[in-house]
Length: 72
Image 1 (cartoon, rainbow, N blue to C red):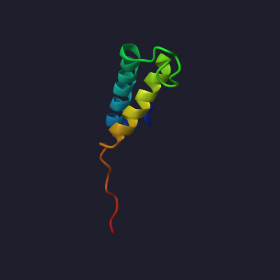
Image 2 (image 1 turned 135 degrees about the horizontal axis):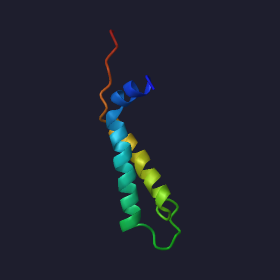
Image 3 (image 1 turned 30 degrees about the horizontal axis):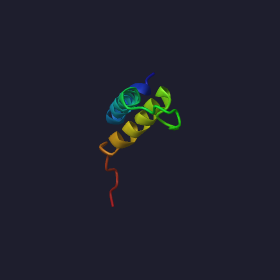
């Protein structure tokens, strides 16, 4: 538990992106989705939500500040 709090503090922006992407993926499935069932990602709600969560994590990770420990 002592290692979890610093991890969350370091990665708060990607974690927020994860939850926002999960919600966006679920809303995409709910509002647009795939009527025929042939779409591999959007035909089932959890696949769409997990794909959205992955995309949210990756996109939000672009905005994470890196510490500059390089002394070259």
